[in-house]
Image (tube, rainbow, N blue to C red; front, side, top):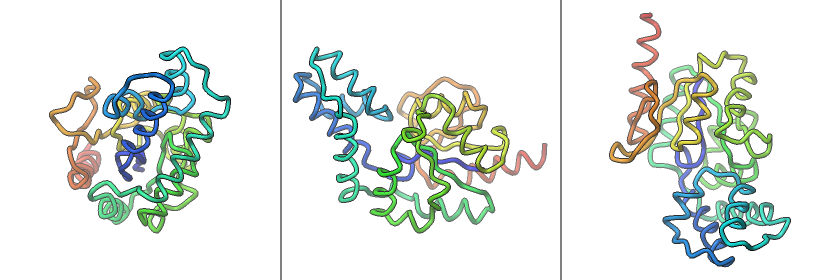
Length: 219
């Protein structure tokens, strides 16, 4: 089975979300750029991001801050979410290989529903195969969301491959005992894990997947 992260792998726009976080941080007195916010907050839990902002600024955030930001992100994604280049074709090619697919993301179900509806990926991805680490209280880098997806499919973790773009997601896959492919430009740093595979564009994923499947059949 192949398990996909959402943001940065299937749907672009996480920089839009982190830009909202940067805007909030500046509102509370943190002189941070959107680029710095993207690097610091990407892939993070909203509650943890709120805690970072509060700790850095010494300001108390509203008790409903995370829920408020969640609503703003969902509204933004309904209008501006876009597929990562090549995502739709890649998903269809993976399905054509006869492999089951699932999504495991730190985004909420509401966020992913907005993103997939906006991009049309909801025509490919089945709702019951989309899992939210936030809603299930299984956020990465904990491995739980990936283990949950494997259990729902009835497939051992060792027979799963994860496609990720974040360090937290890679760590979650490693802890889950799953193979992992990192989608990231080769000139950018990556986690040091001997078993980690890398691609720089989604059009490289299915050819790599075919090689992995071929090597397993010959083992």
